[in-house]
Length: 56
Image 1 (cartoon, rainbow, N blue to C red):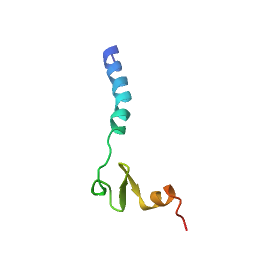
Image 2 (cartoon, rainbow, N blue to C red):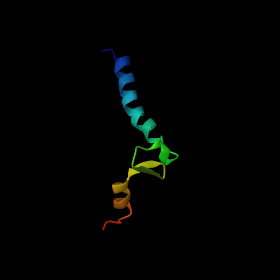
Image 3 (cartoon, rainbow, N blue to C red):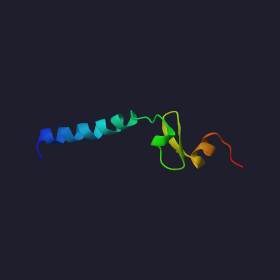
Image 4 (cartoon, helix red, strand yellow):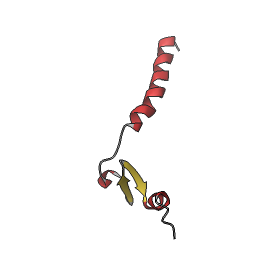
């Protein structure tokens, strides 16, 4: 593998998580079944209970 190909691979590996972090959800319709949208992220019902410490 030449140096240019290696450099491209490294740049893609660095840029992919940065680009993914910028995606935020706008509504619960974009989330999976039994998930809700809160501050742009999808959470399951269990995660919401843990987040707000509302366990029984």
